Amino acid sequence: MHELGVVFHIIEQVDEIAEENKVKRVAEVTLEIGEVSSIVPHYMTECWDWAVLHRSKHMKGCKLNLIQVKATSYCESCKKTYPTVPHGRTCPYCGSGETYLISGNETEIKEIKVED
Ligand SMILES: [Zn+2]
Image (cartoon, rainbow, N blue to C red; front, side, top):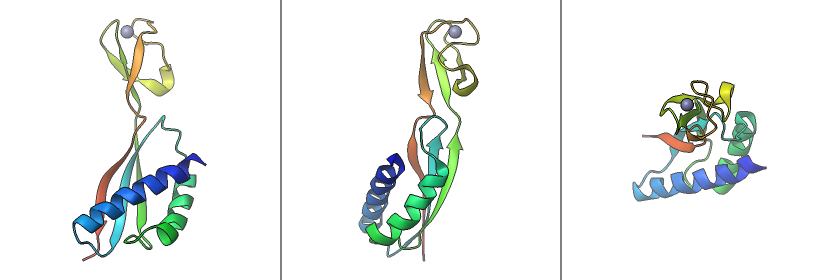
């Protein structure tokens, strides 16, 4: 499962940040998930609950919040941006296929809340 690898990676990062800042316990982590990132939020939460218990140092029982980020593409031909999901790789303004994704594929830590 793809999500488990992502979760492990995030937990590693957050644990490191907690250590650097001498935080005992992280209470909440908010992640931005791109609309086309292939992450299934429901799997993500399941993996998370297991992984924070077994694989983290400072994150036992840590809550996960997910924010979905809309996917946006950029058209090389007419220099416009458009929402990726309804139009795919074809620009809705000029019909060009010279387009690429500029956001919507990320999995990023947006916020970390610590227990005080
Ligand atoms: Zn275009």
